[in-house]
Image (tube, rainbow, N blue to C red):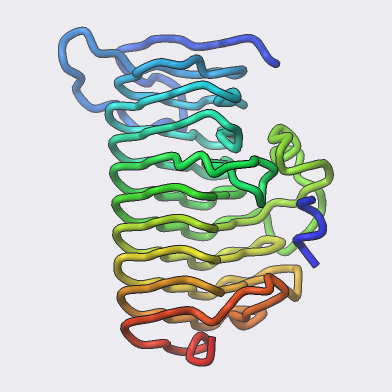
Length: 262
């Protein structure tokens, strides 16, 4: 059911030597001349950034090329729209704060003709984010989401309305599709409209734990290739193939819990 819902501002960037606003992680020591750049809203211009902080509603516009040498932070309540034809390469980690939205990568599922193949050299971590939407990304480390979502609702999300490729009236959700992940994917304690782990190539394990969705078609875990184990526990609805039209998961290790038959 959820999939039926999925069918230019000025630049505002500030260079700072440390992060001074509430909710932002502390900046680490930078090499001489390097600066942390904060986007307060609007488009993020093509360029090579030492460290990038999204503190507002910011977009990587179509055709842009953004490289971040260290970390990318999406602070509490902020939104990063990289569901565009732009290309993002973060050499370190991506950290997503409470009530924030991360949209990274674009493919045909999100109205891009060809996959963008964004890259993250480290990990992607979220803690109580509103939504994390990852499509066609290459993540060398792990993906870990903890307690994401606005609650058990499929009401339209005002934050996701700022991501045009998702269409109008889209609710908050977490989605991991068509990614190549060197480590593991762990999604746990989500409370949202929908969640899917679909067509990923994962170097170690996938764990789906205590994720609850308002959509009865939520918690789709399908067509993944997993070099380690696939475990699914305490989810409501239970992890399922859903309406994605996909194939069973290919798992070299063990299929455990609700995913034993998937």
